[in-house]
Length: 59
Image (cartoon, rainbow, N blue to C red; front, side, top):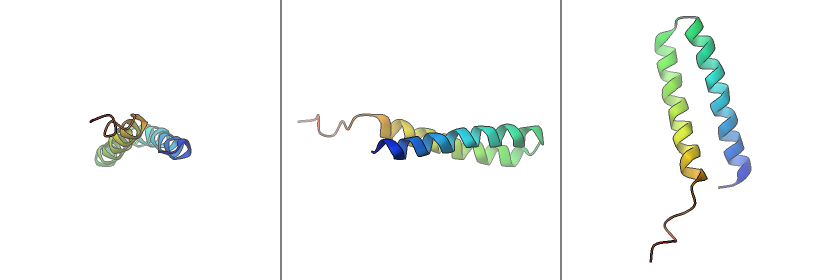
């Protein structure tokens, strides 16, 4: 995965952090839950794309 793609995902993750904090302050719990799920999916994608490709290491 290219570095610009990872940078974009990380930027979106940080933006979601800020949005969650703002939404939490407004006491909109369902929206906070939805945003947290989205943030977790982004975090998982970032982690997966940051790992070296292990399929080529298997022989």
